[in-house]
Amino acid sequence: MNITQEKIDNLNSVVKININPEDYQARVDKAIKEHAKKAKIPGFRPGMVPPAHIRKMYGKSILVDEVNNLLADTLNNYINDNKLEILGQPLPKPVDTQFNWDFNDNFEFDYELGLAPEFTIDFSSKDKITSYDITVDPETLESRISNLRKSYGKRTNPDVSADGDMLYAEFQQLAADGSVFEGGINSTTTLRLDQVKNAKIKKSLIGLKKDDTVDIDIQKALDNDTEQIARLLNISEEDAKDLKSNFRLTVKNINRLEESDLNQEFFDKLFGKDEVKTEEEFKARIEKELEAMMEQNAEQRLQTDLHAFVLSKIDFQLPDEFLKRWLKATNEKLTEEELAQGYDEFARNLKWTLIENKIIKDNNIEIKYEEVFHAAKLRLDAQFRMYSPQPLPEDQLSQYTVQFLQNKENANRIIEEVKAQKVFDHLKTVVTLDKKKIAYNKFLELA
Image (cartoon, rainbow, N blue to C red; front, side, top):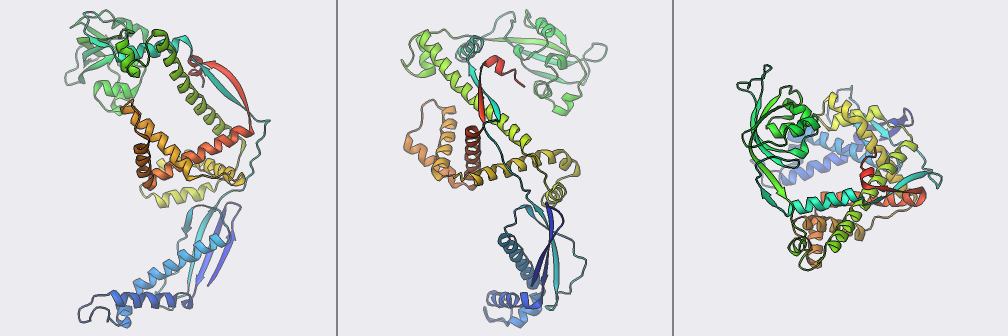
């Protein structure tokens, strides 16, 4: 057997494998004998089928399988022995020669390899990244308190609509002359007035009574939000995108959420009996929860900015044409249009993975099972708390975590999350974090 590598450039090479009969004959003979022991053929006792009979009946297909197995083993061993860092998997080049598959052929196969690029990572304290310290502004605090009071408040049906109400209404599509379009879109559903972005249209929906009608431009009202329009009119997003008609809104009912009183009953529903007893304690508790949430928002923003900074500073090329061929070869349903639209994002993610792996390797960063277990446990705890404010007993949560990680897909996802967090934590110790205080409402305005 002879195997050679022809380097096309720094990112592409071709591996040539020449196989002679002496390379595969022993494997084929062994496979034929194994097949003979297991074969059930009329006229022969089980396990007593002559190998020559198997060779005559199935020899060619066994030869094909064994040559393919030999190729796979040879190629994998060559890549490992030569420490080739490849992207994707090797792609076989079309074979021009027609083989006889008569146990005497010499085979030659060529495989294209996409090679991982070489690059260096050079960060220091000279590299500065803004790290936001988000503060709770009065507007955000009052908005959160108002939402909580509405969530635990009571629903009423006032006679006249006001800002913040919900209109249960019929929407009828209008023709160009302003009349109801016969056979057009007709939907009876709920419209929240806080969804209406256009100030003039919102004003026209305030002060309405049952059975009142208003003609509105639905696209303008919802700021061309295709998803909201589709949901409101019960149509597809594609149809909603092209919709030009006005609609007649007829009020069927007005719904209003009255805010709950700031009393002990409300505090107990939120935090448990007698955990909070005064309005001051309630506001302090909500502010603390918002601060915790904002810490997460700040961390997410820092990670996003670090991610963008690293990708902008470490510039290297990928074997793009090879990767596109590999994506097509491994995804038969992938169209050229889908490949063109999605490749840049795929390449960006691949570059980040290569950078991430190099940071881990260069800095001897370990991913320990205890860390993976802890991360999975926190995730499950957060999920359970969405349905019940009372935490699960520690032993029960640990048992669920073990079961969760027994699923390979779950385990791999958590491992990737832990790996990403460790890389970000490392980067934060290398670059300079430029601390900046910012109110939450201003933070939301950042690009």
